Amino acid sequence: MLGAAGIGIGDEVIVPAFGNIEVAEAVTLTGATPVFADIDPATYCLDPVAVEAMVSPQTAAVVVVHRFGRPADVAVLHEVGQRHGLLVLEQGESETPYAEVAQRRERAAYLDRRLRGVRTPEACGGHTYQQYVVRVPGNGRPDRDAFARALRAKGVECRVPVKTPVHRVPGLRRDVCLPETERAADETLSLPVDASLTKREMNRIVSACNALGGLLQPAF
Image (tube, rainbow, N blue to C red; front, side, top):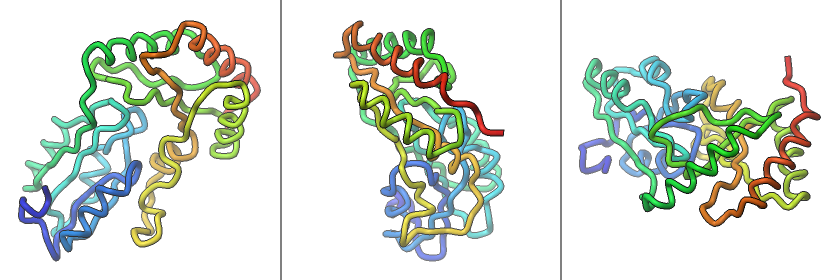
């Protein structure tokens, strides 16, 4: 994708650090340099303001990654690209049958209405809920990880969606300030919304989260 677009040695490509390493690696394979920009805390996708702040004379492109089934603010990112003469490329997520998406949305809405003690995803009409990602309040990673262990002990499958931001991975490490990326990596937890989940299983998720969430207090 990047090579075919003429991206190569001497170019910089703005990418997210919150997510998989493959995008940054694809940039390096062309000989270009990945430059990490911060995310929007609501979408977990690139923040257009943060992207524009990272533009330099060497910037040739921006790679927009849609995250967890929620679309990025592509229209605004394209406006940024047009202002600076940048190529804006999108990396989508795997296609999911409509019926399955509808069931995921139904389960996500159920959790939205009933969960307490965690921050649920912000509403978005185009969300397909590839993952249902909440924020665990408290003191960041220690509380989130303890919360996850306690949920698993209660029989609720959950996982940390992004364990290490890409800008802290050896070989791609950068001394860059990405506060929203760091905060998301420390606080986020993915809860199940699979179409196969029964009402009893959904109730177990709610009961377990609500019982544990009340024990945590936001850090000040």
